[in-house]
Image (tube, rainbow over all chains, first blue to last red; front, side, top):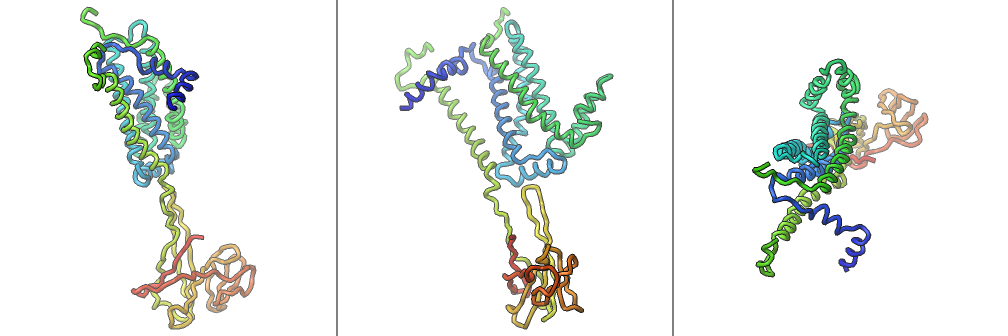
Length: 219
Length: 170
């Protein structure tokens, strides 16, 4: 019976083709360093899921942000686990994306025809850092408040347009409720949307070109 | 792939082993995150609001017969990180030595909810807002209130001689 259901679906959705092209692709000789991209993708999904769950209780307002996180950590069943995964997953994602990038660089996988994959990867790395930067403010504790004060000041040190950039980032000249709100918006809508779109193109390019062989001694 | 030739039928191929392992590890991770996530979502539904409690009013011995004894207490309602506190008050009137022969009024005026005060010279509870007037038995003597003062009907005297009332959020 299930076989018939599957065949009916497969005829219309092309599940077998999807499986073959996405998960059963031919690979060059296996190497654990080649799994870092998949690890980064997994972390992105994990961060997305735990992040969505955190918004059930989190409030992006200076009055309640700290208290709501306190409540997630102490008042909600498994709140500590969901936030813990999101917290450590964020750090891990930056590390994994960076090592992934390093591996691509060292094995020269960015060369023709994969230059665009590399360029988009740079974008992905920067947006990942942006996710880390915006997410850091959201607990609204002393550490995050002053880290963002300093971080936006660094952005403000750009010659000529620095002051303008600082005001855009903070939503005014001071760190305020507006800063928290726009960091929240960037953290849960804009940057994830950018990440998801870039990941889509990145994956398409990888499937189209296949993975590069490890360079041999002669290369 | 070449070793498929000399593997027995009962042995599992390397590819299948990887597939099964991936499935199992993925399932375990999914469960480890998924089950707590559901508990996390449903958590508020399992919390009791604690909207009722026994509230100590004062030493029963301090309350004189025939003399209204004023008391007040505060209830704090906690919803997540939000705390709402509401003040309540009332008067205890003992009619005789028998502890059960006691009436406890809520000092909230039945008209618009201001707090009434006991005026000894008028022998009445007077509401400062619209001059509502209640007798020592709680009955309306004058002014706009539509019904007598509300009562706390559930009360007890503990072994330590403390009068407690049972408060229930309406």
